[in-house]
Amino acid sequence: MNYKGYTAIVEFDEDAEIFFGKVVDIKDIITFEASTVNDLKKEFKISIDEYLKFCEEKKQKPEKPYSGKFNVRINSDLHRRIAIKATKEHKSINDVVVEALQKVAN
Image (cartoon, rainbow, N blue to C red; front, side, top):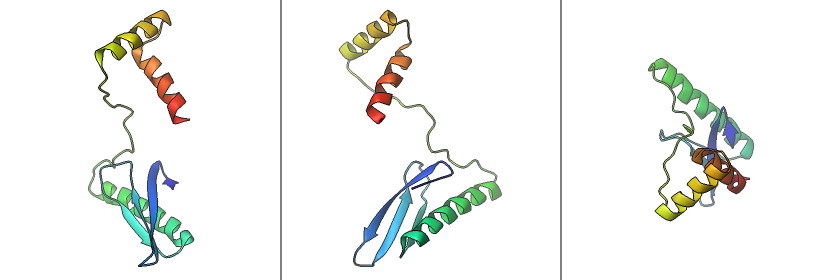
């Protein structure tokens, strides 16, 4: 589920007969639950809106889902091969890695 750039995963608790969800792309904890799919969608949106309102009231920036930066540790031989490929293609290492990641993510 997605709303305003935030993503949630949803599970179903058979014993309690409820759906419950959690926003997964930020460190802050945002959860919600409902007994029907339509209500679950509404509760997700309400939870995000309340989170954003809370942040506004506290004069703090809401956490963004992703910064666009992350560190990856690789072995030195792979690093060297990526650098050579980037140089041959007149690209940055970052460009080569982004292209590779885009292929994996699609």
